Length: 183
Ligand SMILES: [Zn+2]
Ligand SMILES: [Zn+2]
Image (tube, rainbow, N blue to C red; front, side, top):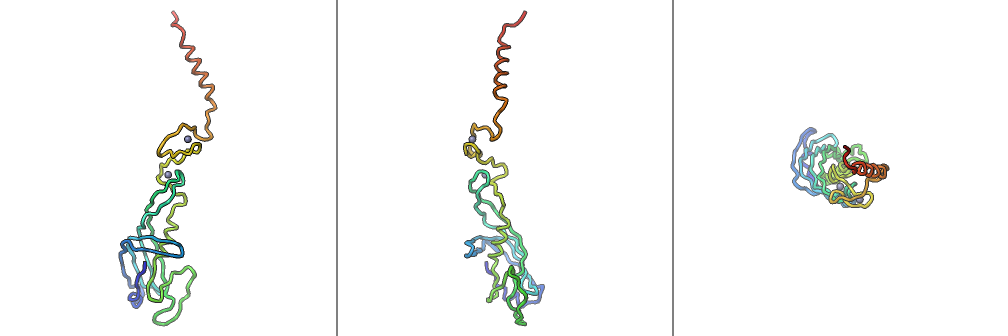
């Protein structure tokens, strides 16, 4: 997503623009990243370049549920503030101090939000994705998806140690009640 900031760069520090993005494509070929963003961007002329304040809804991403292993779609939202730095001041020609992590405004006075969107999407992704909060997952014994079907397996580690005693007790009760009523 490229934004032309050539006019804003000629304005004094503090001048701002607001723009709306509607399904704008963000592409970072080196990272095989493609995304679409919808939302608002505020651009403010700063000392070193342009301060970008963005709030975006991203196209849903496909993730694999950590419990049932089924793919599911998840909507993501990112908010970020980042300063895009001019490699060289347009008036003085002086190159400002630039960190390796700084985003740069390119030679044609455009800034590209794609890499920032990629980075913020990464941090918005859940570490342990779950398709829904009450996902029952897979049966650890037979592997059935318990969201779709049930199985007769006992929960793992919970075999019934009282099973034999219980059936003995049931048998005794039956024998007890078997006699004819006493006078
Ligand atoms: Zn699931
Ligand atoms: Zn099972």
